[in-house]
Each structure stands twice: as structure tokens, then as C-alpha cells.
Image 1 (cartoon, rainbow, N blue to C red):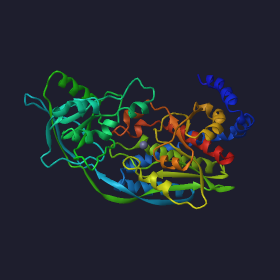
Image 2: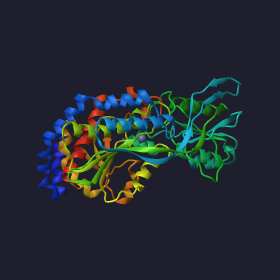
Image 3: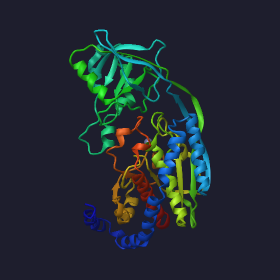
Image 4: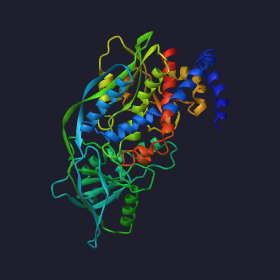
Amino acid sequence: MQRLRYFHFPLYLILFTSSLAAQPVVVQRYDSVTNKIVREALSSNTSFDNLHSLCTTIGHRISGSPQAAQAVEWAKKKMEEYGFDNVHLEPVMVPRWVRGTVEEAYLMYSSGRRESLKITTLGGSVGTPPEGITAEIVEVKSFDELNRLGEKAKGKIVFFNRPMDRKQISTFAAYGGAVDQRGGGAIMAARAGGVAALVRSMTTRIDDFPHTGGMGYVDTVKKVPGIAISTLQAERISKLLAQGEQLKIHFKLSAQTQPDVESFNVVGELTGTEKPKEVIVIGGHLDSWDIGQGAHDDGAGCVQSIEVLRILKKLGLKPKRTIRAVMFMNEENGLRGGIGYAAKDRPGEKHIAAIESDEGGFMPRGFGIADSAAFRKIAPWAPLFASFGADLIRYGGGGADISPMGPKGIPLMSLIVDTHRYFDSHHSENDNLTAVNERELALGAAAMAILTYVMAQEGL
Ligand SMILES: [Zn+2]
């Protein structure tokens, strides 16, 4: 299969004639370096060892938590131990949401029977009154359907049960098509007179693990709690409702939002030998949701970014331009780290690219490049990634943390990985080390190291 991709390659040459002369030279020039990088990534296993350390000594690390503070120290110490240049912290104020506990949650049948129900509080949700919330469930698949219910939604727990679209090849597109229910469900439920939002978990898998994730409020609408149930429970409850069962749910939560606290982006680099003020940012986010271990999301992107610098340093490859690893804080519930990094004044510096790894530590497939000039320049380098099947160079890409750099004209890029399993564990207790394959994680780091090193030498 892989060989077929070579047949596509001449297309790039035809389409981008300006790269015609340079292409074979660049690929030939970095061919042996590429092999060394891949061998070092696979043989050392350092990216997985570091992920193991982050996930087991600290675990999950939501913004503003003691674990997030430990993760900041962990990342700084790692980069100092490897001897990276200019390792430092950049302060940023972050929200502090505290899950508390789900004290009670059960289904109530019209017969009076009660059955315990596994729920997870959505990130940012308010808690319940001390006595909890007890109300009948009304199911909808969309906000339109909710609006059409009119009076029927009053006093109810609105159950948003539109599944992620399994027909979508891109799991991120399927997620994007369903996540409005989680993000805006509580606002829409309250507007309709409902007392809470109950959301089907964002995964295509049918299993019994609820997934959390961010949700929002607006000042003009009453704040009602948002909770999620597993896809298995969602299917079951839907079936019972369709049979005419008048189901109620009772639940009691102690979630709360506390004042913002200071946290940090963690930064380290290999300073460029010839053009140190030209900077390539590579990064992921250090915070995670507060269940599971945040292994794929986004411990993987963090350890890969550290690994890029470690590999280059170990191999004695000195980049001409600065390669800067940034572990952003607060991607999950505020993006304050990404916003803060882009807003900071950095006199004399010019960012030539920013690459994010935040789609999980799965098998790398290539890079998405959201800048046409950068795309034209990089597309002919694809054969450098072909030995491990990561030679897909696609137009379009980026990442949440680096997105605030986009309006400044900085070319944004993302590591493309095989994401079919990403939402199996995303934001759930299954996002832990056992979900990550060490070779896939290492090859992702190798792909990033190759791209950043060649960019650092060749410019964009
Ligand atoms: Zn993430």
C-alpha cells in the first residue's frame, strides 16, 4: 500500500514547479538524518518512559489543580535535565473548576424501582442544590427538536442523545457534529425551562464509560447542571422512553468554580545557531481533564515535544533556527495558555511555524499545514516520512493551543495521526497509559523531529 503513495508524488512536482529543483536535493540531504532520528526515537523509548512518569507520578491534571502545578514542575525539570536552552515558565491565570463528587445518581422507574446510574459531571458545570435534582427525562436529538417541545421541556432533565455520526471518516468531524450538545446543552435546556442537561457521551463506541468535557454558560440564562452518561446507558434510556416508560433521574453533585489561579506554560528550546530569533514552536497541552490520566489528551503531545528536542540534542543536530517546545496550560477549559503565549511580547522574534500534537499518541500519518506557502514548500518533503507511512502532507491543520497565533500570520501545522480510536478513550477514565502504544508514540515524535529539523535548516 505504502508504495502507491510514491505514484502521487510527481503530482506535487507538476503542481508546484517552484519546488521542482529543490525537492530531490532536500530529500536527499536529510535522508540519512531522518533514518537516525527514527532509529533514536524507536530504540530509546524515552517518549513512553516520560509519559509513564507523567501519568503515574502525577496522573490527571486539570488547570488550577495541585496536579497541574506538579506537572508544570515535572516538565520544567525534565527539560532542564536534558540540558535544553532557556527553560522557563511563562505565567498565565487559569480557571479553577473543582468536580467534587457525584454523591447520588439513580434512575427512577414509574413503578418506584430505583437503579444506580453512572454519570460524570461535565467540566464547568454548577453543582446541584443540597437535596439534589429529581426530574423526569425528555429526550431530544437536536436544539431544534428541543425548541419544538415548548412547554413539554419545562421542569425536565433534557436528554441530548444525538450520536456522533458513524458515517464520517474523520472522527473529529463526527465529534464536531455532536459536541454542541455537550458545550451548549445546559444553556439550551435552561432556556427551554429544563432543570439540567443530560448528554450522551462523545464517542462512537457503545460502552459503559461516561466521558466528560467542557460546557459553557451565558450570564443571561440560569445555570443548570450538565452531566454525561455512557453511550450504552444512553441507548438503554432511549429505548425505555420509546416504550413509554416515564423515567426520572435523581442526582446530587458538588461541583463548583473557584477564583482563577496562577499557572504556567512551560517552555524550553534548542536555540538556533544561525538565526536564533526565527522560532519554530512545537507543543501540546499539559493540562488534562480530571478523570483518567490524560495520556493521549495530551500527555502524548507534551512528551513528543520534549522528545523532539532530546533526539536532536542526542544526535548532535544543531538547528540553525530556534526550535521551541511549549507545554501549554489550560487547553481543556479556557485556552488561557495558548492565548497568553500568542499575546506575549517577544521583541525581535519571528515565529516561522507552530506545530501541535493534540490528536492522541497514535500512529502518525503526516502533517496538516494551514498555510498555502508553507504547504507548497513542505509537500515535496513527503518522502522523508514514507519509511514509516507518515508521508501524508495535507492542506489545512493546526491545533487549539496554537490557534491564537494564526491571526498573526504564523503558519499553523498539526501532526496527523490515525484517530479512529481517539474518541474511545477521550476525556474518560480510559485515557490512560494502557491506551498508548510506545512505538506509535515514538514515531509521532520522530515525524515531528524530522519536520522541525528540516524547517529549522531550510527555513520556510
Ligand atoms: Zn487535547
